[in-house]
Length: 145
Image 1 (cartoon, helix red, strand yellow):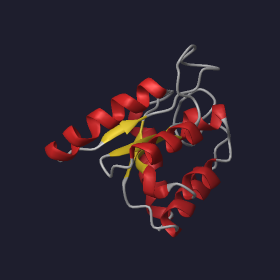
Image 2 (cartoon, rainbow, N blue to C red):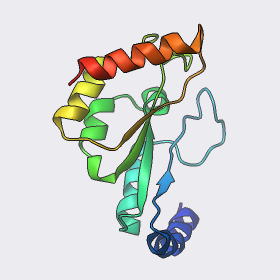
Image 3 (spheres, rainbow, N blue to C red):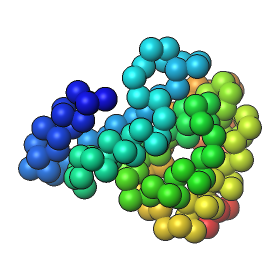
């Protein structure tokens, strides 16, 4: 982790000068990425705090963090200032948002109520026609206004 921190501290001024934001993504090791170093959102948020740059943030992948730690809404809302992007997928299986144990309407409503306005991306493997999953996600976003 010390090496990651050193690298991010060196990269932050370069990102600032270029006007870009670097994203650090914790991944799950239980299903998809065995051996990956950064697994918990708390580790990622701690690193971001230590780097102390508006140009280094966390990519919070809801799918990965559900597998790793749960408490999704609490974790996200307590760290909104450190989140630069969200990824979403059904869990388990990494399929469309309507499949799995995550109640995305609650997640999206909580984020909107808290003022989250950054990106919310979809990163799933379609189990049906891709357009069906996209239409569901679109209707979900529209219904949680």
